[in-house]
Length: 464
Image 1 (cartoon, one colour):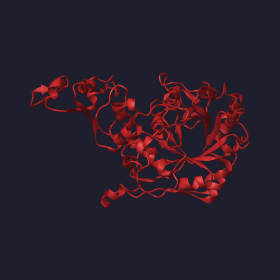
Image 2: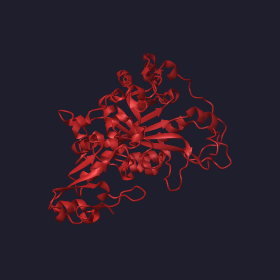
Image 3: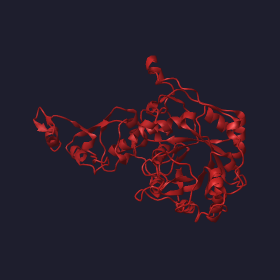
């Protein structure tokens, strides 16, 4: 135990004698784990009474050891704003101040997000799409991830939601990691969730599934949607996403469905002919973060006008993938996922985000600072290229080649195959495991890897 030399007492004993401390000080500065201890696994334990005890003795409480770029307790979902809020807005106590290496984050947490209730009025309109459920907290594509995404504070009438589900192939997770949902189960779940306004279904590898697996996935999706009652209703919106224009063309007769085209590669621009072609088979697009703000060595270099061009052609623009882990973000965002979201919303005016941590983006929509007449400095968006200017030329990262321009040839493709392979029918609605002893025709996954349980599954995302 550390000894305080002037009193020859341990800091632990001093923390139990605030009456004595009050005789020579008006406040205390303590490490954050004195208040919220964590176990060896990185999860929070119940908070101590030290803040309440100090306040009763007339002492202010200031807390140290806050950093954005070190691992946080898993309870915070790698979100530093959530950590600060747990010290100032937890319903039991509030500390009087914090000592931080990243002052922009606690400033925004206290001013912009503290005290927000479930029914706080949104200050900005954009969609929040959770990737594979709350996949940053639970194994993606499982019921645990989906239920966790639903359980966030999404009950406000002003924060409506849409579920997204992706159809693909994958390895079944362990028995303790949740289970995959069939498409029909997913659609039933969406209908039973009052905060949802619709569903988004993402379809990939359709040509492969037809040729190698004998599964016409587009026809199957249409059939399941119809049986679930989504064709003849107006309360739930239906969106279909794919990287293949040939898939989206299969849904052209469904006038009430919104078709979403996902551009897989990073681009710096798009030809007019390419955008015109996209508009012919899609209503919106999904692009990468680097297509909006290019990077060099994890530093923002500049911005593109890809979003502006796509939106000027009548297309909504969603951007992926947003994560809370600081290693996934450009250094310009100060290791804070909220700063990153803020920059894309205010600078690029995107239509929505696709994220592994939906709570962070859902909370941002209620950001009260966006309603101020003057935007606080700590809510200013990052300026692309500003940090690069502070780096000495000899220390700059190597120059990277520019991203390509999306051309018409990148968009145009042949129709889906019309013939089906002669394979046994898949039971249920396509979520059953491949029968033992049956060749699935999938390419091998890497040396030493064994697929012990293959299944076609649906990965759900949440759109707010």
